[in-house]
Length: 93
Image (cartoon, rainbow, N blue to C red; front, side, top):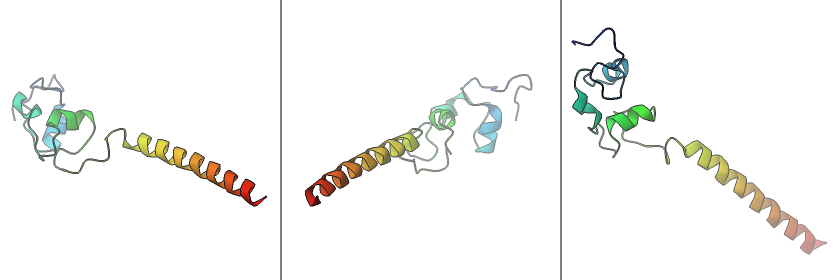
């Protein structure tokens, strides 16, 4: 493919050559970084930086922060549940 064996990113587009080859991109074409291969609103470079699949149009909730948001939301849910239970227990007593 004409890649530079002394560089991990032959076209200097911010995506390493092996990742580009794996996902069917061109490691000697710097313009493919700005393309959106799966039409999900994220450029191929953004997909690379977020460790996402540029062929999969489904984006996890606020990826890559989705897991943290879910943990935070679940923690808030547990706190609210504890407050409700505490008030319910006081009302019975």
